[in-house]
Image (tube, rainbow, N blue to C red):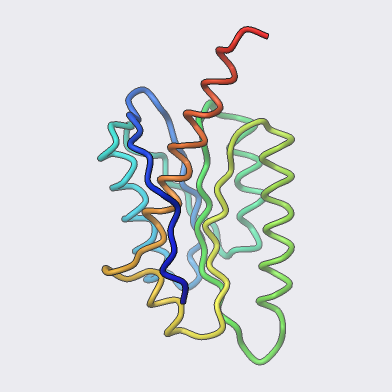
Length: 158
């Protein structure tokens, strides 16, 4: 597992609104990621995020699109955990959701952070959703930074 993380920008999240959309599949791991993401957002001064749950990772792009169309959020974080099984289904889900989430972000003009972990086995998921390393924090940091980036360009005179 890579221990690399992007440099952390200190961002004042005051006045920023976020949604976290998470799958119920692999729920304990997803819950840990959601808790760390939510705590990171509120620690930065943002209001508590809206949290919506969907059955699995495949449903996350549709949910993100729906929330983006009907709400005013500065960024949306989607969180899921997809663990390989006996088939390549995890690869299909990982690839298709990544593409769909990028399309939602561009079409709706709202940052959508792809927080779907696609791993080969349970130990890899646990290593990324634990207490020492928890990618939920990184997802929230990316959302904060992209929300700030978006506000900068919305307010810049062209």
